[in-house]
Picture 1 (cartoon, rainbow, N blue to C red):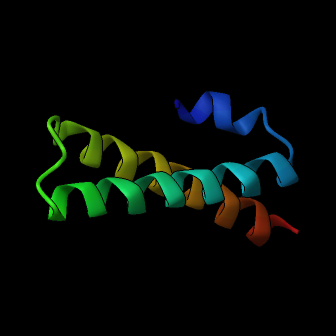
Picture 2 (cartoon, helix red, strand yellow):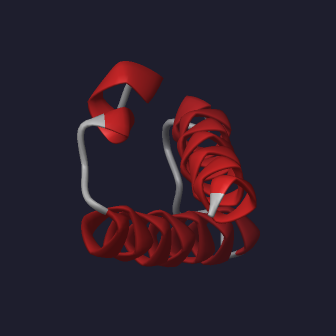
Length: 64
């Protein structure tokens, strides 16, 4: 998800997105560790999505 799309979300939706991205990354790491993950590019994408969401959440927290 792009940062511009994340900026349109409310604070609660952004927090929900952070939780979803975190869960997705966890599941991908488990699959990778058990050698069930076929496309490892998904790990990189999930990490970046989580980082984007966390960065925007931190920006919003700092402004208030």
